[in-house]
Length: 247
Ligand code: NAI
Image 1: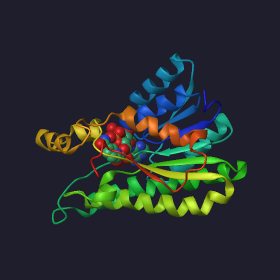
Image 2: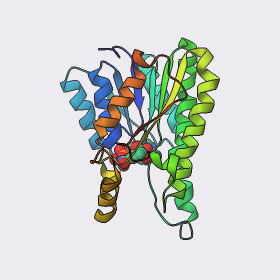
Image 3: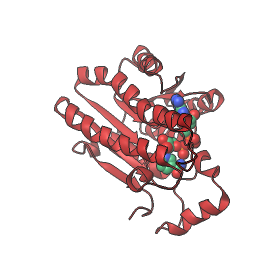
């Protein structure tokens, strides 16, 4: 129970990678706030699953793209559990299109949720972390932010932005005992990738040296490691969890 009595806020925690992170942190003893934008039923299921295993969890609706709602999310965690020790910025969307065809709103939506959302939730969580001189911020980037991808200029820009943000904030808050790291997943089997055409999914799997797509649990274990005391001396790092895809 290495995360016993640590309070963890996970954005987009109702589905996919966020859900796996919520379950993994709870399994290690953390009290979990499962944020969701619209997947209320799925968030309630995650909360019920954690409670059934003897853990502590609560769901909270908030659009991370809104600073006001991000602050509300952190305030809810403070009201219920007294602090925030771990923030996992996981919420994300994709609106793929070739740049020539990309609509302004496809660019804006992806930047607003994937990058501004990270700013919003990090800013909202910093005060309690600074006060207790301890905290872990873990941002879910992507190998697309490292290598780029056709039809994903918006997504790649946001995910690369997260890496710059991670390093800048890591330097800024290190003297206060807070670490900030990023995880860059490769091709992970979730709703997000299930919506890709079958031939593109197959092409990804063919390019992965370890020979399989990743699971949400593969990513969740690395996030749990970064949240754990084993990662005390790691900050400003980006860990790829991609089966070698971006080598
Ligand atoms: P998903 O679509 O299954 O889950 C995304 C979650 O974010 C959902 O629960 C959704 O409700 C939530 N969300 C979306 N907009 C939100 C908003 N405005 N406010 C609050 N929550 C919001 O996708 P998946 O695959 O689980 O992705 C999780 C993260 O991992 C994302 O940041 C994604 O970009 C990243 N990622 C995923 C990869 C993959 O292969 N699945 C690869 C690399 C990164």
